[in-house]
Image 1 (cartoon, one colour):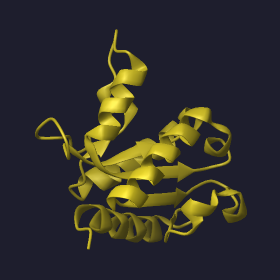
Image 2 (cartoon, one colour):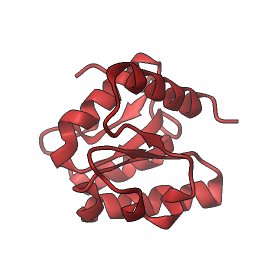
Image 3 (cartoon, helix red, strand yellow):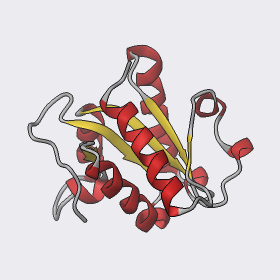
Image 4 (cartoon, one colour):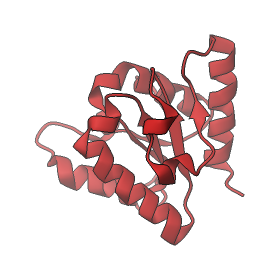
Length: 149
């Protein structure tokens, strides 16, 4: 997978941290590549984890080093304890620090199943879209993550 990586370390090394369930890895990697093609520096566990790394430490560092957060909602992610914990951190930061929180809907997830605070945000809907519509929505998302207003 090729995505735009962080040019430096520390706070704001990444534009966005992606939280997702590993059962959705193929779809999320496609999203990460698409965001990277629009210049978004992506923190995704498959990009920053390596042999012998301590998972919790690396995820915590990536969360700290990311300007914004994105949760990929799918039926699988809604039952993931990891995603629930990452969501809690990302939403707290959005509320307390004004960072961007981007909910992305995939698969056959129902909007009613998405947490209330996430539903309060404008979401990117990638459920059952054609490739041209997918590209447009990812481009809009990338612009929002790179140029918060």
